Image (spheres, rainbow, N blue to C red):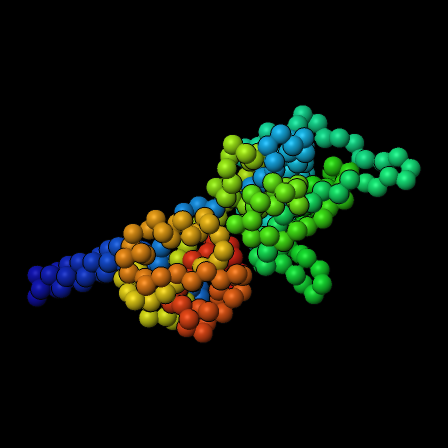
Length: 273
């Protein structure tokens, strides 16, 4: 009897181990209301300016000052619920300029930030006001530099053209991979997240193989589009990807069954799902 009991326990343990290995092989990870089918790479939230722009090192210096005095951590706690900030890179100036008083009749310089359009919790419209973590950071940077802050909502695909045209001075919260490093100055990276392909937990889609003949949804972001294209398992099973103009529309498509899974930044996903 004891020998049979040992055999039964060994078989049960082997079955559990096999199930665990199967789930790992599928890449499935459940987190609350969504299931991660695949991780698509890293997204770095950085500041990007025109190469040679004298503002670039000043903006970097202001970011490090905000990190030191705790305001960056405060913005992260307010909008993400945790302190996820960790600065790296950039070429900060040795000192920040004093507040710009300006001569009589002259207005204070306005620093125009490009921020990601309709990206809760980073930058989105609440009523008639633009709010979010990126907005808080931009306002604090401009204050330290003695400037006024203005914000231009853009998509990741527009970063290079908006900088080149002079419509914005700094793209705030975008990945450096969006631009040509030889033409633009990549400043401080202050936050890192993971891009994921995910389905709702209650969905029958439990692995990439379950996407066979189904479409996935994503947003207008070259970084995500390239990650999807370079993932042989996704291109093998999914019938294609539909690009939606905003994260909100992408999630609406998931809810209405127009797509079986969505590809986006985990920070965005956890806020929307």
